[in-house]
Image: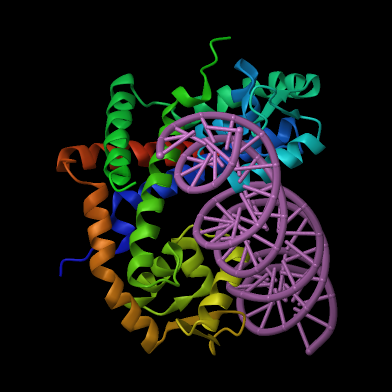
Length: 146
Length: 146
DNA sequence: AATAATTATTTGATATATCAAATAATTGCG
DNA sequence: CGCAATTATTTGATATATCAAATAATTATT
């Protein structure tokens, strides 16, 4: 049964790439704001444009709702964001970025931008487009079952 | 400062893809062997060809050594593998797949293969090659700092 | 040989991932 | 309206991720 060694499939490469990128990002972000994770920064970025529901944010950042509950708890404790009950629908938790959160994200933006540039250095627009399309295909294939 | 929204960068797509693939894999693998994680199965696959040191395996599967210690502990408890002291170098932990581990991995192989096929369905060899090369570039870019 | 430096692994602390079950609010329907 | 179904979130349990510090064995150096 022509069974490839796990390390020879692209899916392994995808894993490798994302881990390398996460490591780079965390390292550089910690240099600017020591006490924040990459994912927390991402959540702040998302909330910077529009306030949202906890579940909405979770969907955007691909987090399990249970994880999201805990991450938000920490972020509220650190005064990065506030969590209030949505008055239209009391099941929903409205998340808003705090002033401190805004300051922090502004401080981080240049580094976040730089991380992306570092990661994508020397990748042409054409390659980026190819990469994007292929990844989308794979994602779609994986989500067929749902 | 032309700062892209986080969701518009390919790095976000990479994250999305790998999460979708992991979900698919875990779902299908659990159907065959309910009590094993994708990563544990990967470790068994790695060890199937050659017995190795714990650190060697960790490097291959991109795991932190501390994580590896804990994963191995669980896998030993479940009788998927054995852990013994390397006699040449007593710092090293030699990992070997057990009979039960072998049986389980044989049982899983067809599904693992199928998962890969599902994920990569309709992706041409040319695309795979492109994908692979671009990912390698990104990984390299991220590892520059080290 | 004795000590310093390095390597492999572990442990503790904390954060996150994931599943299943619980809770609470809202919606749909007879 | 009253209740079943659905939706948003939480909690508990367990697994994994990550960093820093500790341990133990090995290697390099003086």
